[in-house]
Image 1 (tube, helix red, strand yellow):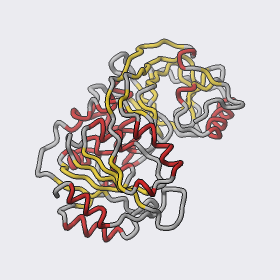
Image 2: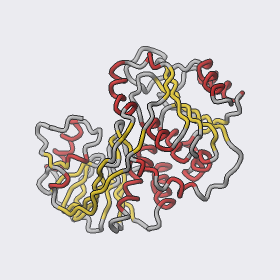
Image 3: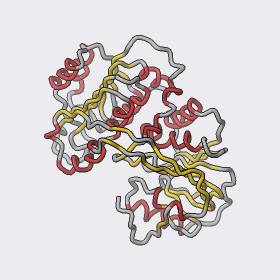
Image 4: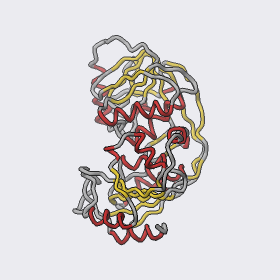
Length: 358
C-alpha cells in the first residue's frame, strides 16, 4: 500500500518517543515456488500481486524491531498514533487510505481519557480477527517480545465466541506467563502510557519469518499421536465455496478422507487433528491455517479460485517443510473477486491424489 497519505501525518517507528528494546534479524531461508495446477486461469494482475511471495526464492536475513513507545493512541485495526497525532508508518498493514484517514480523524476528535498504565504489548493488525492471521502474524510477536521485556497486558482484537477462546488458549499453550487482556474495538481510541510493538516479522503476501513458527512444536507436543488421518477441511456457509462440492466430497471419501469443519472445533481439537494428519485438502481460507501444526512432509492440497491473490499458505508450507500444491479453479460465474463459488474438476483433484500415491 502507498504510505504517503495526503492529510495524515506519519512518523517512523524509530523516531517516535520511546525506547528500542531489540533490533534483531530473522534467519535466511529458501522459499520454493509452489506447484500450481491451472496457472493459466489466474489473471495477470493476480499473478503480479503474488509474484514476490511466490518467486523470491532465497530470502536473506531480515531485520525486525521491538520498541516500547511512550504516550500513544491505538485505534482501527492496530493503527498507532503518537501524542502529536502522527501515524506510525510501520503499523499500516493492508489498511486502506480511507481507513487511515478515518482513524486519523477519530484520533483528532478524541477526548482526553485516563491512560492505560499497565505495561502493554500490541497484538493487533489489519485482519486480526482472522484465525490464521492471529496464529502466524500476531501470536509470534508475543514470543519474541517475551525475550526482552515483561508485560502484564495484551492488547487484542475485540472478538467473541470461538475466536476469543483461540486467542486465550493459544497464549496459554505457548507462553509460560499469565496475562490480562485488553480487547479493543476498531472504533475505540485508547491512550497508553507505554506500549510495546514488534514490527518486521511479516509483510503480508510478501514475507513471513521462520520465527513465526518457533513454538508450534511446543503447542502440539502434548498431543496424542494416533493413526495417520486424511482430512478434508470444509467451509460450510461461506461465500467462497466449491460449486458441486458433493462431487469433491464423494471423491475424497473414496480415498479415505474425513470431513472436518474447524469452526466447530476448539484450538486443542484442531491441533490434534492436524498434528496427526498425513494429508490435508481444503479450500483456501482460515480453516487451513492449522497446517502450521502439521508434521514436516504432510501433503497439503489447497483448492482456490483463480482470482484470489494469496501466498499465505504457500509460505507456511515452504517454511514448515510440507508437500504443497494448489489447484486453481474458475469462478462459477464471471467475477473479479474471490468470495464466490468456484469450480474444481474432480478429475484434476484425483490426479493429485494419485500423484501422492493415496
